[in-house]
Image (cartoon, rainbow, N blue to C red):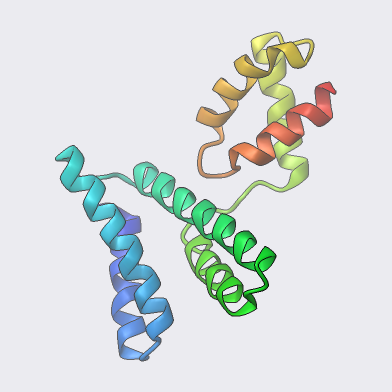
Length: 148
């Protein structure tokens, strides 16, 4: 069993002991998403696979939160953002802007990119290399900042 999955199970038990229903439900939702993928693919997921599921869940929460905010539903906005924060605690430490810029510059040099026309090449390498420590949106913005 992956380390991340063990940590999730421990945190679920602790949330139940502490009667933290919100955290318990958030972790249960994530665990069921992981289980669903495992059943569908018929394999046990590793930490990298679980991180992708967590990132997808965070993105969904943030999109929903923005829609709730636009609709004037502060209560639902707060709930979605709180869930996203709990999920973010399971991701590896994210790169700072300076660290991300350094990594992107290395990748640009590596693929020989000279302009934004090479965005596809850069993104392909960067999203694989920086998976889990920087999301695609941040990578994209940094590439545009450097080459733009």
